[in-house]
Image (cartoon, rainbow over all chains, first blue to last red; front, side, top):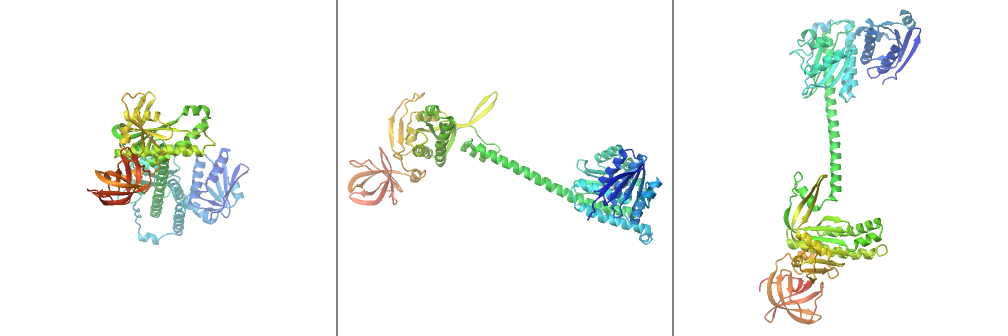
Length: 114
Length: 518
């Protein structure tokens, strides 16, 4: 059964932090895209995606993230990600997401990496 | 049915040589297959299926650009197009490719996956795609899945192609089901719309039927696509009935009361008219014009007279019932029989054309004039109508009254409703089922224990016409002992009931078959 999704946006200095809880799939990806567009509209150039420990991301969800990374590349934004389990870190690396968005172990590490 | 795409060939040795990384990828691919299958199973619309499948393919293989398009192969129009990472320029190029009918045809003879370097059409290059997998959904729909370069910048492997072909096969099956589902929904909607139209037509038919004469309905039902309303000469009986002093009543009563009165009386009249097979042709406030059709000219005259008499009887009944509410009314009823011009009369004007199905000519005009000289309790008939009744009713001679706009003298009779109690529409007609033979047989009849000599004028299987009696009166509906003689001997004896009395004699119905030969 799909876990309820919760997306929140907060600011950490000049970094916009998007917290993601629950499942990420093609059918639940719209709120994440909306959050990205919201911070982009605000002029953010640094965005950190923080995935909760129980996040499940399927291939449809990865497609959403690819779309966001593709757009961020054109807008010259920096994207970092954290909170991902080792399994998803492997998957993200396998599909090439890590070429455009670095994955860091902790939120602090990610914030200081920008 | 669409055929499944053949899986790309793969050397057995490579299977054994997979690295842990490849195995992980393989597991991820299998998981994707499972999830795609699970996600699209519950989807019934083509757009949702193409979108979801494309998203999962793009996410599994890690590509920015992906296209999943389904088009109608008959007219090369897009049925559903999902894409990721395409700008407006690429969208236009995709639209052109669909219009050119390329997407379902782009394939090589042996390989299910078209790679960029094998594509001679330039289609993949134009769209910035590395691979293209065409597929067939059903007899009408074709499609294709195209993917751009991977984010990893790696080439598409045999494993990738195998996964893509499997995904495409799954997508094609789901799209086929969705197309069938859409068709069922479409059929159901068409059926619902058709049923609605039928209900509307039935409703129109029912409501229009109230305004359309029965004869017209019969003509339409005989030939619904091209009913023939042309005027033709037909022998009919025409009945006119109107309320005596309607104008005076209208002046004395409220409009609603007048309408109520007309509805009550004419509703009852309509029942009688329908019972006798009449076709109400015109209603004009206080009047009715009714046409009686029948292949037997005597039968429609009989039906018209019976209907006219029934109108008079019902008038009396309702007068009694409504005595506390309305002043009693009386009806003028006139009937004439003969050839009339029956069919559509078209009245053409600048504002349009009005059609009236009616019987016109002197037969109709005379019927109207006869009604005008009528009075309550009687039905005024022409000599021609009376002649057809074969003495079935008691008729009083009214002579040759002056009729408006009728120059020729017309012999007119009136039939009393009070003297005719048999309201059955079939009895007199039944009586004439058997042909009459004119005879001149001696007979005797017992009236109040008196034996009266008489003669039989004509005979049928169950009926006789007895010559007028001297010194005695027969009563309609009364049965009498009757003997037919042969010399001094009684040749035939029976009980005979009087059905009608006229100047020519009394029509009697016998309780057993009569001899038909001398």
